[in-house]
Image 1 (cartoon, one colour):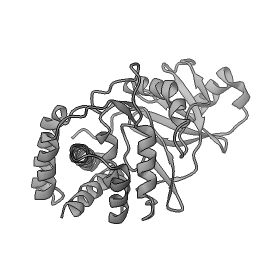
Image 2 (spheres, helix red, strand yellow):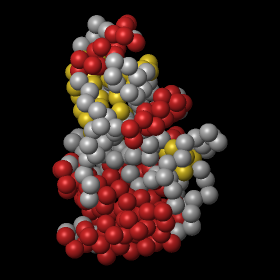
Image 3 (cartoon, one colour):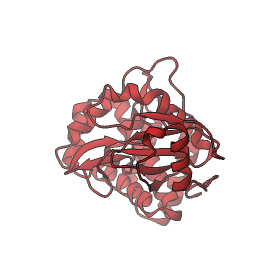
Length: 294
């Protein structure tokens, strides 16, 4: 259990204002306010309609580049809002990494404002739009889209610890993990979001309106994203509708359950260190999966 990685550089609103004034003066008159800090990036609100994303540690460098390189292509084919950069920034004024100005998407993360019971098909439609064949230049990710065998040792150990400390790891969840590991590997290499947990998906009035934090965009097994069905949809009927509309084959469905377990167990355990929201998301993912397997 590691918890949230420590920031390797401090970024203030004053620094953001100075970077904008120096590199993108057309936005210099807009007010800057801090919005949030994730594992890899700071986000600052810029006026009413924009935001600024800046890596907070070196591990976020490649992630911000992925968003700058690929997110405009995704935005053209999905029916929900995604923060494709409207401007990009360079290192400067003591800040060492590239950064982006992106649209601000009005909405609330679905762990705080759940999606409605009728949104299962909408989620599946979004996933289908993302999961197009990936180009040869698409980035690889050692933690997303890979065969589940690559995650076996770490996740199995995590499940063992959670089974001793809580009741979230049921016999049905353990059985689903074994079936996921035994399922045939993916034959398709498609585009993935890669990190579709409930803080990265936005709702408004119960509807799916936006998906943010695309730094883990990569090519790989669509099961990685399909596992989000259990992390994003609180209604059992919505989960059934999403699976029916996406129509995975049995092997893909088994692997998707496995990826739900990967995300659920990891978020629950790591979130228990210092991030109650992550812990709650992980717990609910595992409990929903157990409910659907009952």
